[in-house]
Image 1 (cartoon, one colour):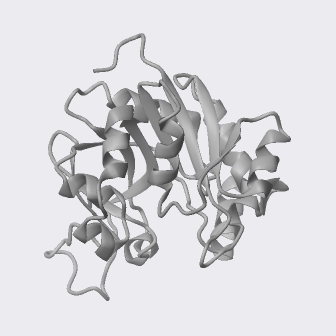
Image 2 (image 1 turned 90 degrees about the horizontal axis):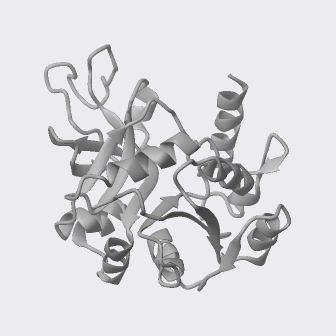
Length: 254
């Protein structure tokens, strides 16, 4: 259980390779590389004592070191961001590790603090955030991961598909819409781990549903690790394509 003496470190996994958008974390957003947006936001957290970028690429490493930040080189063979931050976590003594995606430039320090606070619940192995979906475009976008959770905020499932399906509202998958009071939530790509939970998770083999949906958090659920979900008012966008970069610029402008 968290007490006033806990220590928390943000680790930002950032690889250069990307199928749809190679080198995306170094792409410029309003004149600054995406990875620097993420790093600066993480530094604004009140509850995290340190921020480290974990990368497999010298260019990303240099972009952080040149602004006075902390970065470490990690094994380029890692299959996932979870494995990358676990490599870093093994050398840390922190109680809590926060995984902030390197392609989420609109993340906020308050969101990191919220993720840390959720781990006050001793039943939570992992914590994360979600936000109510407000547009049908997000509903049908498989890159916008949806989450459903129980009455105490523990995740039941994550999917690239629409969950839950509002049967009385929607006739079929071609008639999706959002109205006031309709609860469908998008998962925000930030995770808080107790250090031991992270190391245990990274030691487990990929799970059946994880392989199907290509969502690492399903490995935790399939192995009985409880994920606490907090609701946030903040919107973010993961940069997966050049089009996402344009969308992020529009959100910042607003």
